[in-house]
Each structure stands twice: as structure tokens, then as C-alpha cells.
Image (cartoon, rainbow, N blue to C red):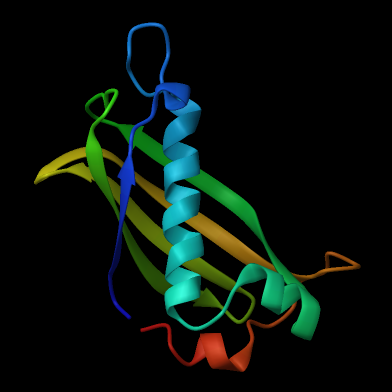
Amino acid sequence: MNEFCWPVRVYYEDTDAGGVVYHAGYVRYFERGRTEWLRAMGCSQAQLVKEQSVVFTIASLEIQYRRPARLDDLLQVVTRPQPAGGASIQFEQQLLRGDEVLASGKVLVACVDAVSFKPRRLPAALRTRIP
């Protein structure tokens, strides 16, 4: 799947006193996009821990904030996975309001053993589905 879109609504809890999404909210929206992308691939994080003893952790995160998201906005999180190595995935993500880009980011996610937190190869079922 080259591109995955997930809708999110801005709730009061996401905003600051001015009704604008607090900067950490964008990180949560991007996380939801990646989690739902994984679910669309037929996996869940809970399933991967239980069945394969793997978890994902953020190795690096870069976000450019362009426009404010505001209370009650209906947004789209666009997630584009790209292979980055045997044990990692690079995601390019955007938060959109209609055609307007509110934020964009790059997130490097590492696959690690759930107990030792040492790097592990991505599960084959997932690795073969990343473009």
C-alpha cells in the first residue's frame, strides 16, 4: 500500500487555550495514521507483540508545522511507508485539511524485540507489503 489516509477530528482535548492544536497533538495524529496503516495491512500492534514478540519504537521524528489545525476541524492523516532497512520503516506523513497541508513529517520506526529491545527484522508478512 503506497498511501494510506485516515480521518481525524480535532477535539477540545487536542487544543490549547486559543482553540489551536497543541504541537504534540500532531505527533499523536501521525501515530494514529501509522497504527491504522498497520491495521489495514492485517496486523495489529497487540498481535505482533503476542505472536512474534516485536514492537515498534520511534528512532527519529521530524515535523514541519505550516498552518494551525483548529477545534472541530476534520483532517486527513496521509501515511506513505518506505523501506528503510531490514529492521525499520521510514514514513512520510502529512496532516491535511482539504487540500491544505497543515504539517508534514518524517518518522523512522524501528522494529525491536519486545523483551530485549534489540533490533529485529520486520515480520515477513509486513516487509513484503511495503513498496
